[in-house]
Image (tube, rainbow, N blue to C red; front, top):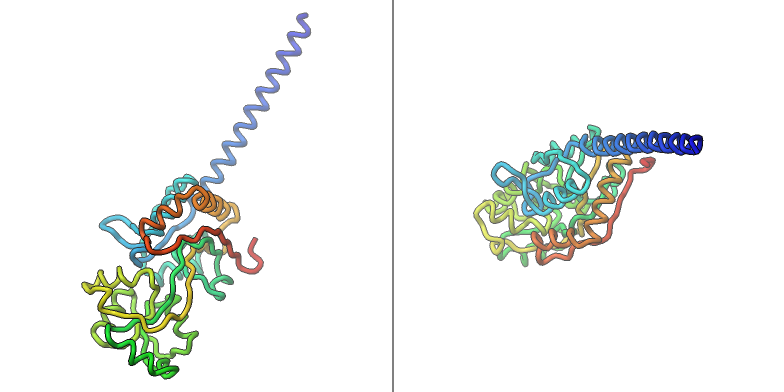
Length: 275
């Protein structure tokens, strides 16, 4: 009987050693995963109500979305509010960068990993109230007019693609809206989701402007720089899928954009040769 007891004790000890080793490996994998997730530099822009500064913190629909995703993947990296041109430059040139929100386009699909959409907007031309009818009568000649646009934005790119060649750019949509109201030009190209907030920011009402023409539909995404690891992006993708499935995504979307329909599909677009 003693030899049977010794064998059982040997097996038990060996099993415990294997269990301990397995736990150490799992801990190491988990720690590695969390470290990967925390290496990202996370940038957003001042583009209310999607993202904006609110005192000493960042706020907005997309900010709340990203913060909820961070909780799910145990990521504690601070979200930095920076000028769009700076964040976009970092996205294209530096490793491990997450920038939001980024409008989807064929060109950008080749330059970054896009995950989303977080919202769907329209890109449209706006003018001062009472001016739209006369501008619409111009037909294709409207393309000869100067258009104001947020510098380096997809809105400037869209106007250019639609045939506009005289595009005046500034560092924020608020500056462009102010220039429109000061009659520096008659057309402002912008995303429909933010127009009301931008007008409020500059001390005007959205009722003081009107839409001239819709140029395009625009899906808004999280964008990762191409050197970002597949494991990191998969963490964010799985968390986004879970949020869209359990209803938390829709609740945040409706809180900030009550008149818009939340996009519930999950799309991940990789540049050619990535993953």
